[in-house]
Image (cartoon, rainbow, N blue to C red; front, side, top):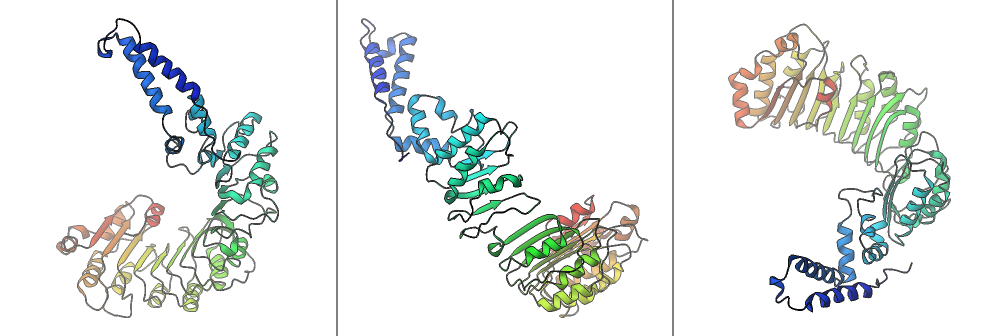
Amino acid sequence: MDGVKEPDITWIEIEAHQAMVQISLQPGLGPLSTRPSDYQKQSSLAFAVLNIISLPVELLTEIFIWCLPDGQLFVNPNPLDAPLLLCKVCRLWRLVALNTPELWQSLLVVRPGANDPRFLELCRLWISRATTYPLSVRLNISDRGNPDALFRTIADLAPQWRNMDLGQYVSILPKLVPQEASFPALERLAITANDRHPCSFLDAPKLRELPWSQLTTFMADFIDLDRCMAVLSETPNLVDCTVVLSGNSPAGIPIPPLLHLRSLTISLSFSVSPEDIYTTLLDGLTAPALQHLTLRYGRNQFFETPTLLSFIARSAAPLQTLALSSLPADLMDCLQRTPSLTQLRIDLRPDADRAAFFTMLQGRSKEFLPCLESLRVVLSGVSEPVMIGGAILEMLVSRWEGTAVAKLRAFQLVHEQTPAALDEVGSLTERSEYRRLKADGMELFVGSHGAFVEAFTEPII
C-alpha cells in the first residue's frame, strides 16, 4: 500500500444529484417550505449527503482520527468503536478509513478468544494497515491457535515499534523479537516474564526502560535479592529504583557506584530477614546523588543500623527524604549524619522512647536536622500510655518559631484507634498553642488513618 488513495465517490454524487432533481421537479408542489414533510426530509438528507462527500479527504481523515477512543494507549478491536465502526457506515468512509494509517497504529490483543484464527487474521490485517507508522501493541496471548502469521507481521515491523507490551508468555518471544534486529523508534517496552528469554534490545537508542544499560527506572515486585543485585550491577544510569524483595542471598553481587540514583525504595516480604537483606544490599551500594530513601518492612521485622549508617557515610549523598518503617536503635546518630533532610517519615514502635524522640527534634541545635520542613510520625502497636502531647507541642512551637533551624511547615501524627494510643497523644488538638500554630499556617494532622500500611505509604504533605 503506497499511501492514502483518493476514494471513488462519483456514484454517491450521481445518486445524490438525481435525488435532488427528482425532488425539485415534482409538479405542483410549490416552494420547499410548503411541500409535505416526506419531501422535506428527502431534500435534507440529499443535502447532508452532498455536504459529507464534498469534504476533502484530508479533512475527513482528520475527523476519523479524532474518533479513536480517548485515553487508550492500545486500541481494543471493537465493532462499536472507531476505527472498525467507521468502516461500516458507507463505501466512502470505508475507503478513507482503510487508507488512514493513523487509525491502525495501535492495537490491544488480550481478551477471551484472542487465539481464534479469525480474530488473529483481523489483528494481522489491522497492523498491516499502519504501513510505515510507529506501532503501539499490547500482546498477551499464547501460541495456541496458530498465531504465527500475526507474530511474523509484528516481527517484520520491528523498526516501527514505539510502545510494546509483549505479555507474559515467554515461549512466544523468539517468534516476536528478531535476532539482531534494530528498534530505532522503540521508546517503551514491557515484558512480564519469570524466566530469561533469548532476545536483545541493544539497538534501541530511544528506549529508556530496557535494556539495563539504558534503564533509568526499575520497579520489581517479589524479586530475589541476588537477581535484584544483578540488575543493579548492570544499570549505571539508574535514577529511580523501587523493589519488593522476597528472598535472601548467601553472598552479594558487586555493584558499581550508582552515580545517578536519586530515589531508592526497598520493601520486604514477610518471609525474609530484614537484617540479612539490608546488610547484603546496602553494603554493596554507593549512591552519591541519592535524595530519597525509603526502607519498609513488617511490624515483627527488625534490623540494626550500622549498615545503614555505613551506607549513608559512604555515599555522602544530599539526602532530602528519609522514610523508615521502624525506629532503629541508633536513629539519632543516623539523623545527625543527614543534615540535608527536608522530609522525615518514621514509625515509632512501642519499644521506642517516643518522648525522647520529640524532645530531640525541638530544633535547638543547628546540627540536628536544620533543614527539616515536613515530619510524619506513625505510632504503631500497643504500648503503655505515656503522655507525649507536651513534648510534641514543644517541638512544634520550637520548629515553627525558632531561628536556629528551618521552619517546620507540615506535621502529621498518625496513631491507631486504641484507648492506649488516645491516652498517649492526649488532648493535643485541643490546646491553644496547637490551634494557634494551625491558624498561623502550619499544616497539621493528628488522628487515626485506620491501617498502618495505608498511613505509611501515603505521600508526605
